[in-house]
Image 1 (cartoon, rainbow, N blue to C red):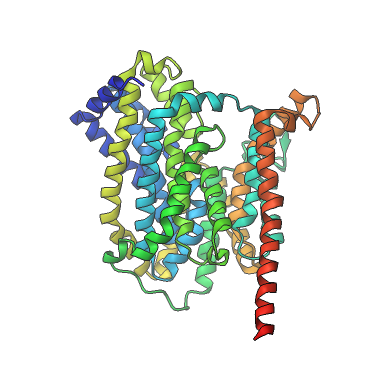
Image 2: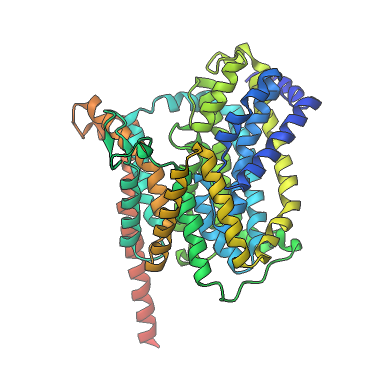
Length: 505
């Protein structure tokens, strides 16, 4: 590998104006992540006119900083308020908020910051060295591979529930059903729109997440507003303890690998990565019952995974010209506006842009770590606000964020309706996590499966005969059938051994 372009990229990244725009990008990204509803894709789209008069490298560095900076910002509201503004932080809210409820918000956010830094930095290093090879592998993915990948995610959402597997499956099925609302992706015919054009475009993820997690959680908390509140940790506790670090380090390592690999694949991304990382941590844990009650691994793994995926998702964009997600699609447009076509020729025709943007991510991750740790104390103090005061503020922020998506009052009514659904689910013991994540994966599953069936002429066995999708089918069978059976056998053997020991005594 010729290192001269890489070294040139560092010189570009360390130019003062590029450092300034990197700082602006990650700061705006973190603030945008904190604000529920206004995600990085919308923010980047709004700021596109600002980039017209900027140098191409500075413009893309700033916009990229907004993207990966928002990943950590979304963690803050997920941990403190259980209000994820991004799909990639839905999983973090499960154990992160449980930690905050028992007075460990500072360590949770501290671990999240460190995991984000390590995951993002590790992903940048891998991106720099093996981007062309992994981009070529991603090119082999077609509808069949996306179908199996989405199926793996759908089956794994069952591991998110802390109660009945049947309830988790039922919630996931409801999420899949809600994902079908709108126009048929292939035929264009309306489905479950009840004769109104308001539902023709389907239901946005932010509406579902804000309704179930935001309004639903607020209603549930107001019902229990007189229960004792956990002690708010001091700023000094934002630095993770030795125990937190020991429990998190392997989760961070595994999450970084999972995030990098899935982030490269269009359709994988930060959401799938955080989901798979959480499932991996829960399945490998010695005591899976800790998850959902405040397991620090449930924060460390998904946070390293979604930040690694946010970085590696630049690979298909920059080397193939294939946007891996909505934000990458907006960045694709930003590059085109600058007269730069993303694709295989980008590294040879514009090495300053390619390596300047890639190497600026090292700087951006360091800036995020330096910004996030000192401000954790400010965010943790939000827990001191009484629920009766915090609830209306949160509702206003939620409604403003939802309205800003399409400037549509109907979306606000949907949020209220889904909030009542979320409240009812909490009362009946159904968890919203499987519902929301199945909703996110549902559209990918349906479109990919139907395209695959058209290509295969209705022959389902083609999924197994293709090398990549066949390998993924094996992974699916192992994850869904073999591993649970082995775990059940091991649990039964352990119980029998314990009973035999008691009888011997």
